[in-house]
Length: 142
Image (cartoon, rainbow, N blue to C red):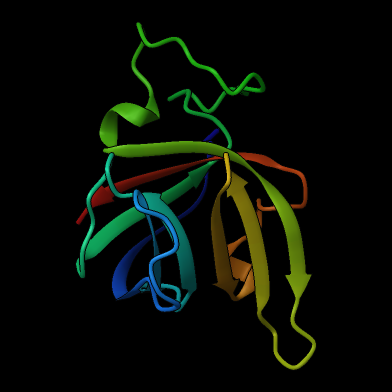
């Protein structure tokens, strides 16, 4: 069983559209290549510098390669994990799941230690994402 809930490649369209709010964090506005998703994501740029480029993003319920549950938010660094394949990994919680009345889109809001993510698009491509779910977000440059 796979722990991957969502996977797509995004292209950065804007950086800090409302102005720079924090020295070491930027908000990126992105659009996906495969599923026509809109993404706003806060990234600690002092840890993971990112510009106007493409990146692969995965949302997963566990870092275990066999897909087994990982409810603790911690993983054993001595064994192989999904994180080994990515450059930037965050652990957080979906705090809002909103269906848009005027369209068939949904908005999924998640917080990763205060770094916010908003993913909007067709709910058919987001079947495993639900309110209060604990998830991992993994990124690597495409």
